[in-house]
Every structure is written in structure tokens, then in C-alpha cells.
Length: 99
Image (tube, rainbow, N blue to C red):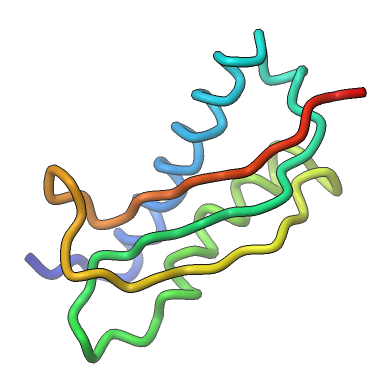
């Protein structure tokens, strides 16, 4: 199933929000997240797809909107043949706690 790039950006954004919520749940609230250090994006795509970074911008932009300067992070993305449950995007984050 082909997903338009704009829809991929939205999916990355939603996936990043889910990742932030999962970390916040583990730590006892979003205010306990000190910074987001790394974002990992898996993009389900064909061999000739080259706009991985554009899709991952959806996640990166959301994280910076939530955390400001503490949301600036390193990132990498990987194109894969498929993801669980047919998802177009999967996002993982590495975060630090507040001191």
C-alpha cells in the first residue's frame, strides 16, 4: 500500500506522540522527561523511496514543539520493507530524565 508523503509525515508525528506518551507513563509524567536525545525512525517503503528525512521531520518537529531546546536531538532513519500491523512509520526515542 502506497502512502502519500504528507500522510507519512502525519503518521510519524502520531508515532512520536505515542513514544513520548510511553516514556512519560514510565517516568510518571511528561514533566519528568528532561530531554529527548535521539529519534529513530523506521519508514515502510519501496526500494526507490528517497524521502525518508521528510517523513521523519514529522516526528522531529513535534518533539521540538513539545520540548523546545530540550527536544533537539540526533536522529537516524531506516527504510524497511514492512512494519508490524502494516504501519507506515515506527518511531523510537531515547530520552533523559530531569535532574
